[in-house]
Image (cartoon, rainbow, N blue to C red; front, top):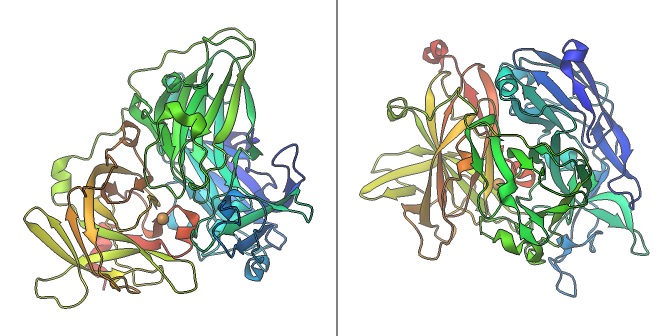
Length: 574
Ligand SMILES: [Cu+2]
């Protein structure tokens, strides 16, 4: 269990030291060198109250070098045909000396925080070891599981992998009215990540963290699943209802979690009551295949163990292959989910073991959140609409470049590369006006006004898209088919024709799951899909970011700025 750091016990004034330390990921593994908040993996779980501001002095005391070996293996698979990402060690790769030279610049982002721009953790505003950083978090936001993690431009993938992540729980009165478990033993946060380790010259695991990619796969999918800093842990549970606050904090891996007992799916034990930004309107069942969480997505779960005899064991398994493309896998077959081609050598996540105790089931309230409704259609009718194409570009001799192409509608007679979107009879023509983080800012949302953002996936993988500041609601998932001509993907320009409607070979459902009908800050955009979200920024003006939360994508270069503006300032914008 991560240590709890309760803000009210410190008058809302916290100091968190960002430190180089050691950590043992498993009792049978040697110690690992890590970077951690307060020197731990994960960092302390900060608990705050709605409406009670929290000030954190993030004290950077890191000592380099980066405690992670980064390498690109020369081959995708070894001589036995096993993909090297399923294996520990460097698989013939050379340690990247540029990563080895990183000395510990940091910046902290509170993911899900309704935070003024100055304290949001802009990826270029770094503090080096010894430089002060005091961030103010107003906490004027509903109860939810947030998390804080490093966000340094270009190296977030290394810094988070090194250990720089921790949970942050906001609590409020509505949750207390509902009598939900709060704190130990019945409320348990579960931060799920994947990690890989080096081998010594005799082939034994060392504790050294390894971030390994290969010529075919630019994301690191590590073989060992880690929960709250431990590989494949066991949690003793009483015969009672538990509240699990689950978050995927992996760099790239998407999980589809299945609960098994004696080889049978027991997903019916699980009720989901909340998502990224807190309570859902009503409790929901999990999807029949299991709970899908892409990087940074959260789920608030109630799991009833009350009918189980002491000694009963339940396994939490992952059935999602990687890179994740939305493909389904039946929960009942979870024990057969291991799949080397799918970079899933070990499906196991953790184990629950029932210990003796008084049986205590908890009734689940039927009405949960009462403070939001779907965005009213009349407010969306005139809402500004923004279109973003998710695009992967191959670069000779380097990892692929992923970008979010911000699209602007052009006149019918526009000459040059175009993205056309055909919806029945209607054809909309766009050109890309920005692709890279440093390209000109084109999004200036007005505070208080709903906007509709369309995320058009022109790649083969699912991307979890995260918008900083306010949460949003998903409006629609539409199947699409598209064509991109040879050389159609240029540095910024793109030529593509997109048609709304299902491709005959497309097997994805493109449904919105019940557990996505809440307040989200990270949404999965699957292949052959357009996702529409309604977002309304409410409180803070300033420069923020939105990005893919696959950290290898965010770092290269799937991240863009936007600037929220108070309405009265809009006339003065040049
Ligand atoms: Cu991505």
